Image (tube, rainbow, N blue to C red):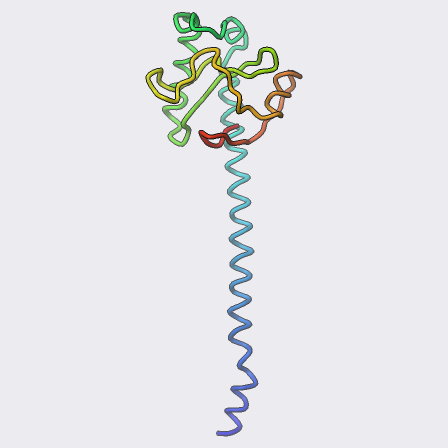
Amino acid sequence: MIISMNFARKRSWVFPVIITVIIVVGVIISSYTAVTVHNINKRDLIDRVNTIAQAIDVKDVESLSATDSDINNPTYTNLKSLLTRVRSVNSDVRFIYLNGIKDGELFFYVDSEDPISESYSPPGEPYPEATDLMRQLFQSKMNGSEIASDRWGLWA
């Protein structure tokens, strides 16, 4: 019996080591999964933005004045309807906007939000929360994308 007690004392480190290894492996797997899911969601969001962009004719956007008079413009109505329909089939999307830039400041051309909503942005409303990269993309007219957030959530 004395021999088995000594044997048990000598092996008492095995259980804590196994538990520690399981915890470390669990943390590594969880971290890897979180990063992978984040990257997949990021790619998915950018792909959706690109899909929407392909459905919009730039000439239609350029024909807008970004003023209240756009509300009665059939082109504005068609763009708003398109954005609203796209949002309705993407239940995880809250807002879809078309933005422009004038004098270095970004503004809204079209907002998918209902005009009676507190979150609605009428044509021409400034978007002061735009990131520097977003401004640079508009000013340089180059292609690019970013994932950022503002008080309304995550956007691309």
